Length: 117
Image (cartoon, rainbow, N blue to C red; front, side, top):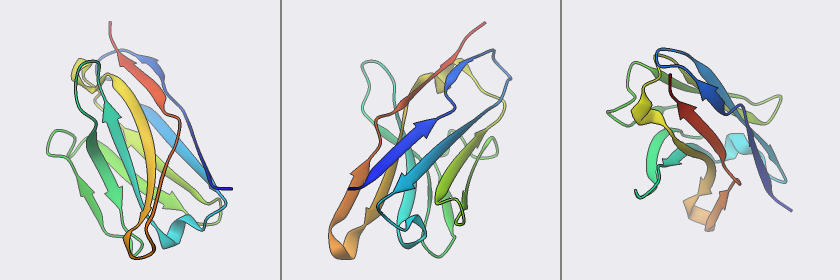
């Protein structure tokens, strides 16, 4: 059974930092493209950052220079370091594991991030 368990969300003031974690079980996450998505109230889910199996990364323009995605293969965990947070970053953040060639696409349950003073 595949599980992606997110943690690390919470309430933070503008300009603050949070680190989200996505612990994977049932898969070897280093074989997958691991991504972080977010969905704000009334908006569509959007890609925030992705780290591919080869280690390359891509970021949404809105978070470039502020967010960093990285993985710890020994812990089978992917992280999203979020700095200089803004109120617009407020959303539910979801972890995703995707391996297109074998048709695998898994989601975590989400963790809430609120940026507010």
